Image (cartoon, rainbow, N blue to C red; front, top):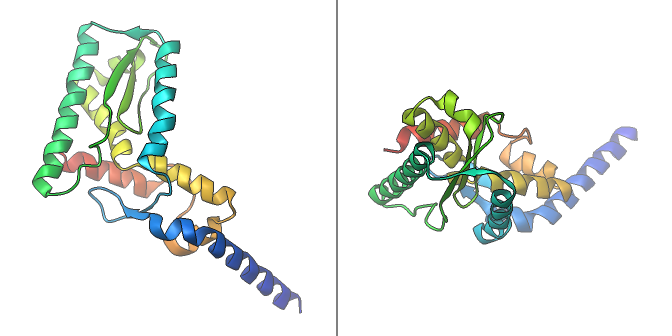
Length: 202
């Protein structure tokens, strides 16, 4: 009897998860650029940009920025070179450029203690001065920036946010059943995509 009740409870949970999540999930499983992995995404680019662009402006207003230096100019130059490489790659492949609506922008933050760089959805990029000694040269900067841009190209932020939303709605069980994935941050498959993106771009 106990086994039957447990089984019925599980069926009930699965039923609720599927009924709540199917309408969101089914039209929102897309392919990641340059890979065959299916990606769960229920957030549009317009929605993401409406959140990240103001956040980027707020970040700039509250940060001490470096402009007009050789280091800053190199970051901007390298960033636009990567942008152009992405455009050329997708044109040669006859595919839609996932960065077509990006509004590229690059800042260098005067913070020697922070060894980091990041790229928000939509091509909003920040480098901290603390990471420049680690990068050492333009090749190092390009490697770091390419990795961060790859996150945006693959829409990992949208994917993670989508997963969180579905989990909050009680549909994590449905996601795991269909996709066979787990909510573990940037998992191995995401980083495998980043390596593939970096290798395939010219």
